[in-house]
Structure formats: structure tokens, C-alpha cells
Image 1 (cartoon, rainbow, N blue to C red):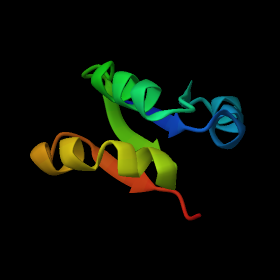
Image 2: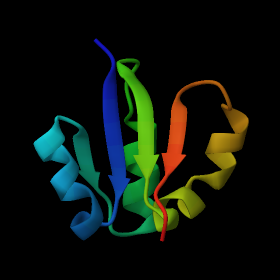
Image 3: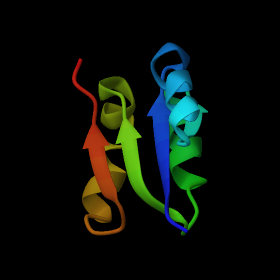
Image 4: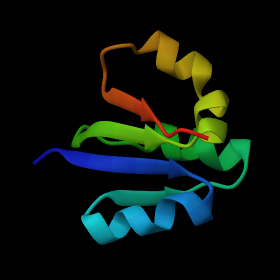
Length: 74
């Protein structure tokens, strides 16, 4: 079954778990990159906060079709 993962600042991602998404709080660039690298094959959609998106910009460009990526508005 495909899953949705939400990565970013704790205050912006925790509520997504109520809807069944995998909320992955990551409050600094190292945590964001670790969360990105830990995504498994069952994740089909990744929602990123704007700050998290900046942290994994290069990775997103290297794997353009791997998952659907959505960036939250500021």
C-alpha cells in the first residue's frame, strides 16, 4: 500500500498524522536529509515544508520521478 510522508518542522507536520500520513518531524537540515534518505519504497507522495524542501533540493532534482513531491505554501 502506498503511503504519504510529511517532512519538516514539528509544528507543521504533526497534525498530518491524524489523517494517516507518516509525519516525520525534522527541525534542522541534518534531520531533514536523514528523513529523506530513510524513505522506503512504500512512500508514493512526500509533502515537504518550504524549509525542508530547500534542504533536499539537490536530491529532488537527482530523482525526479521517484515519488510525487509537494511543497507546502509558506
